[in-house]
Image (cartoon, rainbow over all chains, first blue to last red; front, side, top):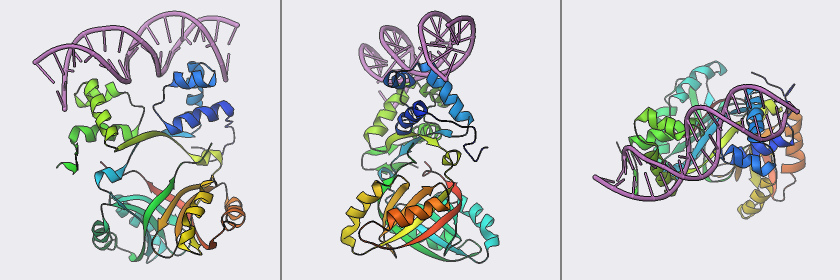
Length: 156
Length: 156
DNA sequence: GATGAAATGCTGTAAGG
DNA sequence: CCTTACAGCATTTCATC
C-alpha cells in the first residue's frame, strides 16, 4: 500500500476518466471513450493502472437514508478515560451500525463519530444505552446536523 | 421484518441487491442475479423501483486521496456572527475544494465542516487565508483526524 | 501507451403468465 | 412480481503499431 504519489503520474486523460466515474460509477466505458476521444481499450488500461496504484479503491451505490426514515444525523465527541482504551472503544463502536464514521482526533475529545438515527428518540437511546455503556467512555458532546449542505469527494 | 416508508417496501431481495451494489457499483447485474437465484430482468425492475423511490441516488468511484498526497483530514467548527449569514457562508465554502462536508449544526458552532489537506501547512493556509476570510466567520475550532477508523454507509 | 477486431458476456426492453 | 428471449452494445483481451 502506497502512501505517496511517488511513481504515480496521472495526466489530464486519467483525470477526465476519474471525473466521469466519480460521478457515476456505472457510466459505460465506451461512452467515456467517445466523449474524450480515445479507445475503450485505452481506458481499461488506464483504469487498471489507477487501481494498481491504490488510487482507485472501488465503487459504491449511494443510497439516501432519508427514504428509509433515517432523518437525524449527528456528530458525537467522546471523552475517554485514557488514550489506551481507544482500540477497545473503536471495536465496540464498530458493532453499532448507526456509527458511520469514527475519527481519532486531536483536541477536546479522543474520538469523534458520525451517527445516523431515525429520530431524536433513537439518537437518545443510542447515546444512553449504547455509547455511554462502552467501558472507558466518560462523557460525550452531541452536535445534531440540521442540514448537510455539502457532501463530496476530493476534486481531481 | 419489512421496512416501510409510505409506499416503499423493500424486501429481502431488494436488500441483497443493494448490499451487492453498495459494495461494488460495477458488479454485473447478471452475476447478482445468479447469486441470488432470480432473473436479471427482475433485478432491473427492482432497481428502477428503488431509483424511482429516491432510495437509490447514484453511484460513485471511490478514490484514496492519500495516494495523491492528501494526508491531513480535519473537522473545523465555525462560529458565525449571525445565523443569517449561514447561506452566504455555505456558498463561500462550496468554492473551497478542500471542504468535503458542511453541516448546519446545533450546539457550539453554526457550522461544522470536514476538510482534506495535503499536510498541516496546507491546513493552516486554508484556515488563515480562506476560511477565516469569509465574511461573518468570527472564530474556528479545529480537530485533526489522526486516523479515520470507521467509514461506511448505513447498513441495509 | 494506443489501436481495431473478435469473442464473450451484459443490458434493458418486450411479451406473457 | 416474476419469467424467457432477443437485439444491440459493452467489455476485455490480444496482436500490432
